[in-house]
Structure formats: C-alpha cells, structure tokens
Length: 64
Image 1 (cartoon, rainbow, N blue to C red):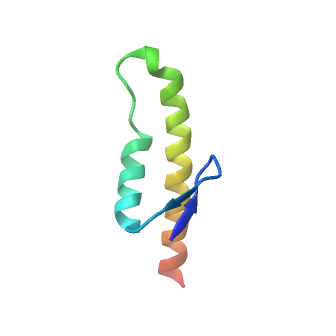
Image 2 (image 1 turned 90 degrees about the vertical axis):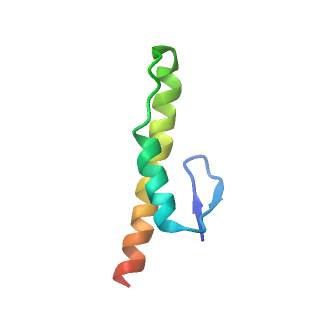
Image 3 (image 1 turned 180 degrees about the horizontal axis):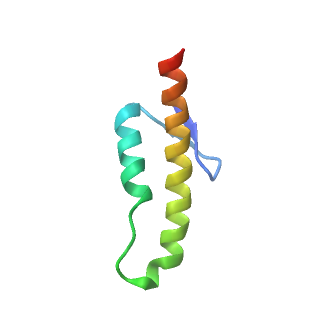
C-alpha cells in the first residue's frame, strides 16, 4: 500500500504494523544537542503526521 507523506510524496508500506512501530519511535526522537531543535521540530511534525495516517489505515482495515 502507499501512503502520501506530509510533503506529498508516495511512501510504499509493505508491513503496516512495523511501519506504525517505526513511526511511533521516530516521532518521539530528539537530539541531545539543541542545535538540532529546528530539525527535530520538522521531523516530529513529519513522523507524527505519518503515524496518524498509518494508524488511520490500520483502524480502517481492522474495522472493515
């Protein structure tokens, strides 16, 4: 299946459960070095969006 990311790119997902686990982990990641704070903010936005989209797909598949 494909998921459109926050940048409009199509991302192929072959293992939905694993993708959800990865997105959950990445959306909480922060560098210890505060010089990366802007990068971390963008990454958190990206991975939070991806996580919500993947969860929505999972919910749709399990309730159908």
